[in-house]
Image 1 (cartoon, rainbow, N blue to C red):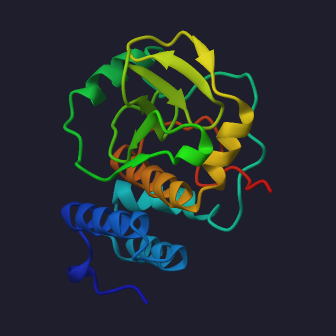
Image 2: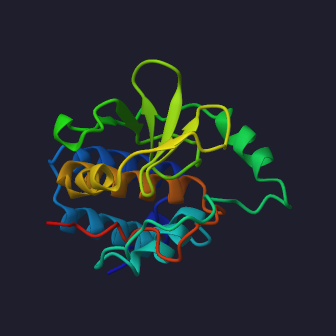
Length: 206
């Protein structure tokens, strides 16, 4: 049952609640079912007009299923910036990293050279996306495997499909990615996703 109006969650309270919930989910202290209950609590008990609650409301409808197979050769994430997505990207990069957890892919995936930042404000090439741990800075689209130079949007390579499947079969990464998606959606509620149900993660494969 929703709480009284005078006790509704304000923006700062929501930020703290979501951050601690995301960390707890990622380290395994909070099961996915309880994490969803916390999202629903925010949805039902936020102050009127809360953009964070609105974002959570939009993504909760897809909490019970995985995404369709994601390996198409189509465009990247984009934001409505009056025809200039790079303008908003530049402005987002000026914001401080939230200090949320990082995730390094397991060696068994073949992607241990990539590290993911849960509080990354950069939306390109995917949310979340990987950064190289050494050598020339590059970024990895976690869904499609495309590799990009850190400062450009031109594809320079691609990780094999089998490695991306192994990454999404990792339950720890799935929890990490789900928390990263919720964090981004609540922090940037005007973001336009490239899929209609961004909380639906890619299928697990045997």
